[in-house]
Structure formats: structure tokens, C-alpha cells
Length: 124
Image (cartoon, rainbow, N blue to C red; front, side, top):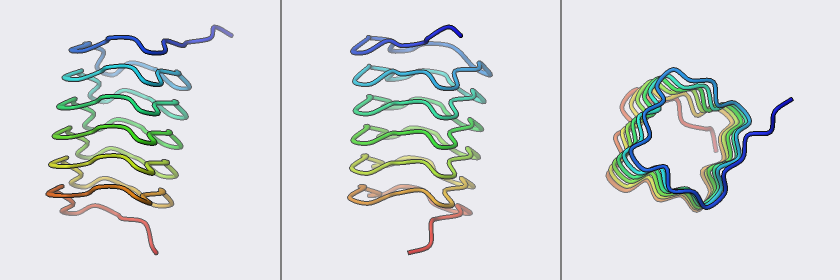
């Protein structure tokens, strides 16, 4: 099995819609403005990643780790994020409409001005 890892990489404005990136390790990388619409990121390790303004709409983010990630103004509409770990993530202005966050950990997460319309938020 090929290991997919790129730590501290600058992948800003990357264009990989509908791509299988499951299990990828991109900790501390810059993905600002990236197009990952519909991508499969199941089980990905994305700690401290900069996803400012990225498009992750419809993406599969099941069991993804996004601790301390910056998702300011990112589009996650319709994404599946069940079991995701978002502790300390910044979701200021993020579009979380119709996102499934069942079982997700949002502890110490900044949801300021995030659009959560129709989102399935975790039960406390």
C-alpha cells in the first residue's frame, strides 16, 4: 500500500475534486483555496491545516482529524463528517449547511458566524 504523506506542504489552490485521498496525512500543510469538492478524505490526518476558503462541499470527511485546523470561510456544505475530530478548529464563517457531524468532537471549536442550517450537530 502506498503511503500518502505531505507534512508542512504548500498546496494552496490545489484542484482535486472527486479524488480519493482517504487516509492521507497532511498535518500543518496549507490548502487555502483548494478545490476538494466531493473528495474522499475518510480517516485523513489534517491537524493544524490551513483550509481557509477551501471548497470541501459534498466531501467525505468521516473519522477525519482536523484538530486546530483553520477552516475560516471554507465551504463544507453537504459534507459527511461523522466521527470527525475538530477540537480547537476555527470554523469562523464556514458553510456547514446540511453537514452530518454526528459523533464529531467539536470541543474548543470556534463556530463564530458559521452557517449550520440543516446541519446534524453532535448531541451533547
